[in-house]
Image: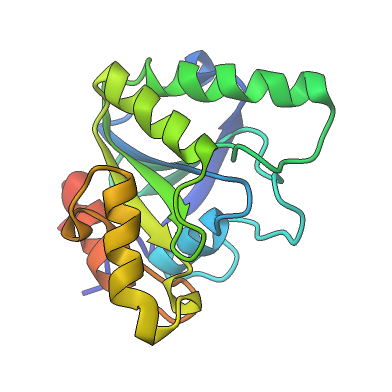
Length: 196
């Protein structure tokens, strides 16, 4: 039997959540522009080119929808922070992201990506505080965990968690490059989407 999520394929992009159709269930991924969101999505789907990976932060400028299983969506949201582009365009991204997150009754989880080595930035804190204030279900995923020296990994996990008022076990620690934590996160996403 095939692994869940490996059948994922791109279906549509939109600048306005109201233009998206309906689905049975969906999860969304959000994070800073250079946190490795596209690489993580590719690793979860076990595909090299599902989401486009760019050396330039902020290439995701629309709400990108990927279909997996029957009527289940994985949604890639524009990154915040270091994105390049006209100021007027960047200003619309926040409204686009917030509009999507507050208008989807089938949204099961928002995965907020933070850099495992850098830790949560001011922008990460703002996003997480906003999600908490809106009462939206969210889970922190620390990406690029392979870049944390093994001798410092345990302390870094505790420090990142404490910074977010969480326990270390509340945060998924993953590395798309090394595959660390990917099978567990893939299973978590599949369970949220009711995929067998």
